[in-house]
Length: 75
Image (cartoon, rainbow, N blue to C red):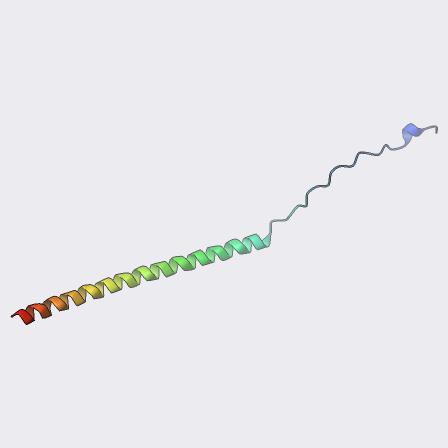
């Protein structure tokens, strides 16, 4: 057992490294999908606001017509 000092000593086992996940394409796709859905919701909301404004204008016109009819019926 001469030259035992020349033998490589076994290094202690290191704990395994956690798996490294590359930046997932799924996350990118998911965020793009979410962004697209949000944009669609915003467009729909703007559309609803426009429709509400149009309905309010129509109600005002109907109110004017009713007032005129009431005045005509009174006279």
